[in-house]
Length: 416
Ligand SMILES: [Zn+2]
Ligand SMILES: [Zn+2]
Image (spheres, rainbow, N blue to C red):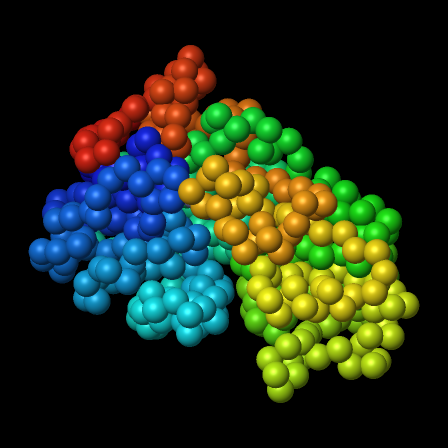
C-alpha cells in the first residue's frame, strides 16, 4: 500500500490523503484550506478530481468545512462515504444556509448521493477494508478509520481529542476495533497551542453552570453544529433553572442527535429533561422574534440561556431582554480578532466588548497523543493537519519513528 498526502503536511485545513493498492484508491477528506493559510492552488488529482474513477472512493472523517467543503467540486460518479448522523446534520445545516450561500445548495444536493457507514461496522472497497470508529471532536459523529489492504494497516485519526465528554471510551474502542497497526496518520493541530486544551469539556460545563447561576440573562455565541457544547449548555441551564432558548434550526439539530444516534442517543447527555425542554423561538409576521406576554413574563422571572447568532434579529431580541445581561464567546477567538483572516465583523459587533471567553479545543494535546501511540504500536507515524510538522517530529521522534512527508510525496507503507 502507498500513501500520498496531497495536502495537509504543513497546514491545518484542507487535508487530502490517498491510500493506493493495486490501482485502487481510497481518498480521505476533501475540504477547504483555512482562510489564514491558503497555501496551495485548487487541487488536480488524477483519479479523484478527474480521470478514470472506477477504482476510486472518498471517505469523509466529519462535517467541518476543512474536511468536506470541496466535495461539491468532485465528479458525481465518485462514491463518497460518511457517517450517518454526521451526514444528516450537514444536510440540515446546508439546507438552512442554502438560501444565502449558493455553495450550500450544491452541498445539500451532493449529500443526497453520499453513502453512509456506522461506527464499529467494517466495510470494504476493492482490496481495502475500512473500520470506522467514533472520534470525539467538536463535530458530532466524527470518525477515525483503520484502513487495511494486503495485510498492511493504517490508523487515520481524523480530527479528535481526549478531553471531551465521549473521550473516555477511546482506549477500549481502540483495543476492540483497531488493535495494533503498521502506521498512524495523525492530526497535530495543537502542537503550538498548549493553552487551547487547558480545560476539559466537563470543567468548561461547570464553569458555565456557575456563570449561569450568577447572571440573569446569558447569551452564548457558539457554532451551531458543536453538539456536545450545546447539550452541555442545555444541561447547565436546566441545573440552575434558567430557560434554554434556541432557534428552530438549532432545536432541529439537537433533535437529530436525540434518539437517532445508535451509540450516543441513549446517553443522558443527549436527552431533554421533562421539566426543561429547550424553548424554541417563534417569529412575528415582520420576521422578528415574537415576545409573547407569557414568554416575556417567564424570562423576567427566570432569566435565560439564549443560544444566539450574530444577526439583527437576535440583536433586537437581546435588546428587549430585561435586567442584567452577560454575553459569552464559546468558539475560537480568531473570529473576533481583526488581525485574523477569519475575522467576522458581525460576530464582533453582536458580541460587543464585555463578553466572557469560554471555550476549549476540539483537538488533542500532545501529552494525550503520546498516550495513544502505545495502544497502536505503529512502525511509523505520519503527521498531517498541522502547521508545525517539524515540531511534531521533535516531540515524538524519541519514542516513535516519525515520517515527515511533504505535500504530494508518495510513501510506501510496508509490513512490520
Ligand atoms: Zn474538525
Ligand atoms: Zn480539521
